[in-house]
Amino acid sequence: MDIREQLCELGLSLYNRGLTHGSTGNLSARLPDGNIIVTPTGSSLGRLTPEGLSVISPQGELISGAKPTKEVPLHQAFYSTRGDKAGAVVHLHSCHSTALSLLPSEDETDWLPHLTPYGIMQLGKVRLLPYFIPGSPEIGKAITGLAGKHSAVMLANHGPVVTAKNIEAAVYAAEELEATAKLAFLTRALNPNGLTPEQVDALVRQYNVEWN
Image (cartoon, rainbow, N blue to C red; front, side, top):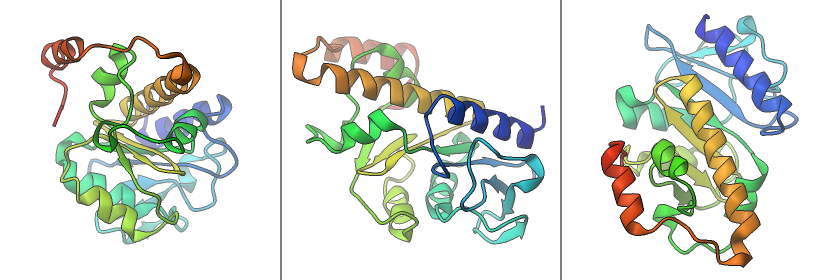
């Protein structure tokens, strides 16, 4: 399947399952020529078309298509700092992860609770970033400041941003972040039995997880 068609198909899947709503969220993927396809501004992930996607240069200049999402700086920041590890970026406004970001955090450098092995395996440490106005270049600067050490960040009061080697893997990782956040939110007042540091360390070693 062409990468443009795949991005549209996955966008529809995210939309149909309520992981994004209205015209929220945006997706991007790196093309073989180094340019980037990205969802247009104001577009719904449930109604994307391959021919309607925007194409931008790595520097963010529009090459073809409609005006791209205002969140281009955060996409650029991941591509520029993570190199070949970033083949796609997914930014959602998913409910439970956003809800969890509204609550006090014990560790902003390792924000997502260690409840299941899959959050560790697919995301590594998720970094909580402070609130910025949507579309602000400051979001890109904050991600760039992490020097490529995180594949996923949570924008407080806003939503998660996840990158992976391809769009399918990035979507799966974003889904795992939301699923883990939902578990954390539902069990927060119940003192759940999370993974021990020893169990986390074993996962990191066995699956070669980035764990800075």
